[in-house]
Length: 532
Image: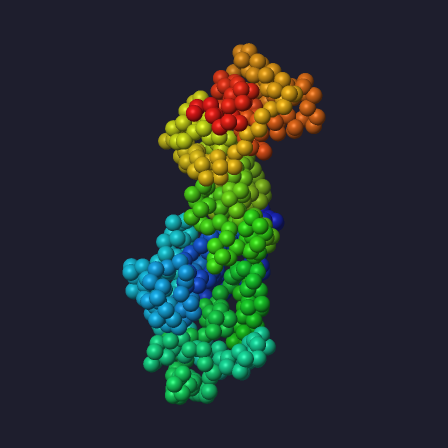
């Protein structure tokens, strides 16, 4: 047994805890199908979003953890429920009025309002695949329409027909009285209109594999349950898919726990073992309210990637999936810096420590080296103090601090500089509020300025930090954090800030002196920052 596998057997990281459930599932014998199947589901009535990324990223983390523990092959299917009927027209697509004529058609028969694909479902499926491909996920795309029409679900659909009463016994108690009166797990695809119909099943003919239902005009029609002539209601459909494909693992949001519990029971009623399941908490916005696509609150995928790297988002998804977390712009700097802290720690860790490091799970065990010689948060402070408007301005400071660094040799740092500038312009600059120094603070800032002017040694961050500490102590700041708060509020216009010795080393001693002079002259409060 190699070192990684040995360590993985005891690893406490949540993907390994999940993976060990799958190991136990096949402790006696490998699956007859020859592989362990992971699944994620997608409803293509809307576009891929940050939750889609999170579900595929987290599922992939469990998959890779399992592969570290077992030699059984794995597959990941991203399943699109694209045969479902269009219930309402999404508010964020063109051709609103035209699409109303397509209500209740399967999504793969609804016209594409963007005019690029054969259907709205095909358009959104293509967006999903492009989305997943952009992040390098390894997956297989699966379409409900294709699977139903090709007969891949036929055997299990016939079993649902055979065990209709057992499925109804599970489903009916979960429904209201009105819904109970009309409910059937089978939704016929009307040969007259093409609509997905939610109508009662009037007759069942197990021997012929058919059901009888009434069209809205009253005509009774007999159709087979196979070959794409019907679509199951989504909860029985979820369970049927588990059973038909032999799904071994699936995760879902906390709000779907009751539906998953019904699915587990239906899967067993169909004579198949349900998958190992895992529920995660949803994200909240800055007010603590659940993020909703319809509300448009919270942070979108595109917004995160405007200000930070995909890997930082993966780190955010990795951390505490069962804990509700705020997904808002102010979490981005911390995620960026923590990601690179984990990268820097990785080379010096032993096998057990690496498996507990999030970057093992983000990079499937092959974590790259970090080239962030300047933290993201420091780049923000630098942009603020330098009044920087482009990356070249930032690189001028960075090269002086780290002469060996450059955009070509440090592409991660170069990308981070661009992210930081955009973040600074959109969030930091509008919120900056400088205040004037009080009498004691003015004396301390004057002292700090004079000591910097007399500084003859190299711009060593630790030595400069010690000098900043000494100034605060000698001027009676107690607690000492009040001195650093004054530095941030008076010099940077922010409530929090960097380790100040490192900031001086990066920004430059002459530049810091000029910044202090501007603050003491009152020009920062009036908006005339150095460099204007």
